[in-house]
Amino acid sequence: MAANVQVQTARQRMPARKRDEQVRRLCRRLRTLAPHLDNPAFAPLIQSYAKVSLLLARGYESLRDSEIVGPDGEMKSSVDAVRRLAETSARLAKELGLTPLTLRALSRERTIDLPAAMAGED
Image 1 (cartoon, rainbow, N blue to C red):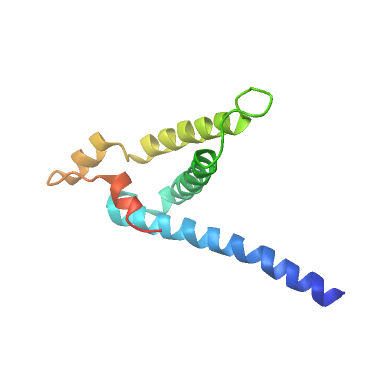
Image 2 (image 1 turned 135 degrees about the vertical axis):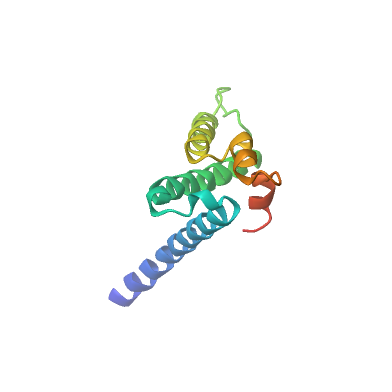
């Protein structure tokens, strides 16, 4: 019985580890694409942005693959959750200086298409 509990716990932890690795990869990619963020002071905001961005992507994928109107004829609450995640993501991006205008000013030589660059990898 105890072995069965340990196996289930290990299985449940694996997706969390995978999600944690996705957050770390996105944080590294952000620091590479926007070198001004390679400062420990930005770490909490970068991690928040990465988590919110990944949640937003998962939430949108879930909505995209299903009906947005429930059987009662009302819009699903997950639509509002995705909207709020998108607003939070945009606010964090602005605070981190990830808007196109800021990135262009920082790079001065070339423009960075951050969404396209981030979509290039998992």
